Length: 171
Image (cartoon, rainbow, N blue to C red; front, side):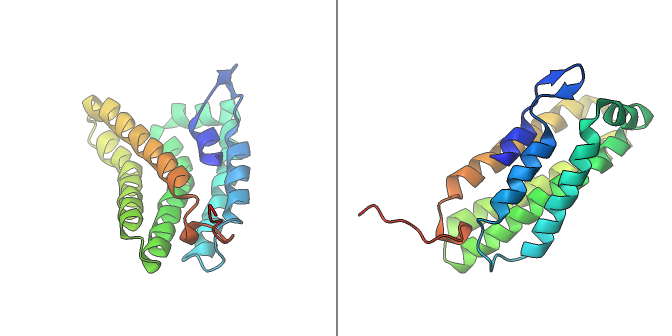
């Protein structure tokens, strides 16, 4: 749910009424519900804390606008901890799914992790090569990847490998 808050925006006078720091606090809270043996658990948590810290700074409109006005690559660099968190979380979950024999989920999560990395790297290629005609496609692709991430996290949230709590049977 936290990533959904991060993804959505409702700006009034430059401030987001759905503040990303609130979303990242929810994400960090949600990490406690993941199994203790989750691969890369400490790295995922550290990246989440870093994403929270950068989101606090970027929530202030003057700072985010200043970075973008100075150079778009600065704003891109400030978003990297968030993208790194998502990619690492998906990779960790894909490994956990694979360990418990959920090959389909593992494949989807691993592929989406790679797409997240691609979405993180594409701005360097598009802006670096001054391919302004590809900006819309790049943003659209990144948005589709983010929606896919959120859908997969909701879809797989009740799987045994994604929860520290034992699965509840329907009986």
